[in-house]
Image 1 (cartoon, rainbow, N blue to C red):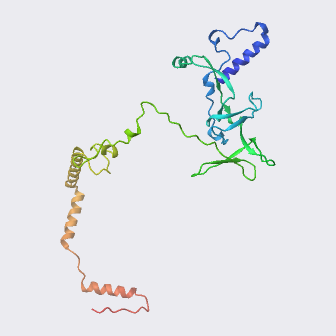
Image 2 (cartoon, one colour; image 1 turned 120 degrees about the vertical axis):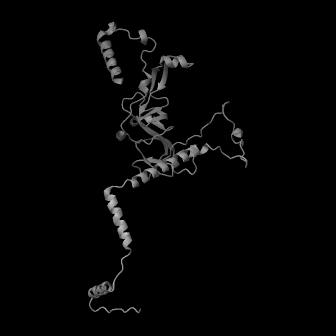
Image 3 (cartoon, rainbow, N blue to C red; image 1 turned 60 degrees about the horizontal axis):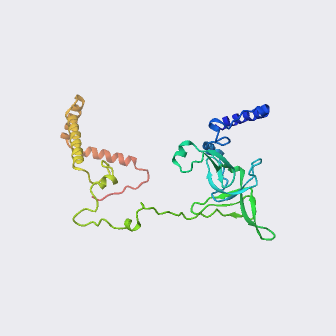
Length: 303
């Protein structure tokens, strides 16, 4: 959109130069009342890539000066009204004013019917520098100083601080204090006395909360829930019975291999526990004596 406007203006400027008095009038037709204005969409800016963004340590209510070369408001000072971090722009009061044409749908809903209005267009943060009063090193008198570069120190539990880069000792530049929000009362607002009024007092004859509250605090079918509905309990018990029936059906289905294993287990169980004979005990003793390390004294355990 901006490129198309620039191209059209270049053509118009060339025609004005070449044609002279024969140049066509452009303040007619649809642009009769809005010639020389720009669209409100031009004030939205373009989002800058995250890796190209920079922290300029500026905030709302900071006094800044325009330092961009060739800017029409270069050298003028104003206060920041709005900062658009993603677009790396700021709206400064009283600076970079432009005439915009208000769309027709906005004129239909507003009491102000002017088709052209003057607003502050955003300025790049790179074109702004902070203006802050600092004492003179010799006289000690306060005077406005244009600060070239600021650095920020971030804290987790404390507010961030900013200081002038490259100055020793460090010069701290405080952030503007935030004014307390002024909440305007309206006729539809609920009064505080009505909010604090106790409208429900539980008793022993009725529960303090309805039974359906548990469905909001805990999922109706959650495994962490202690109490469930009767239909849910009945459903789960039926599922358990069906699973147990399927398990018994599987056990009743015996294959030839399962039948052989069952007979082997029954025969092994019928033999009972094995008993050691005198010959077996003597043989075990001989093996233990042969494995004993040389020179080790045999301990005799009294019977």
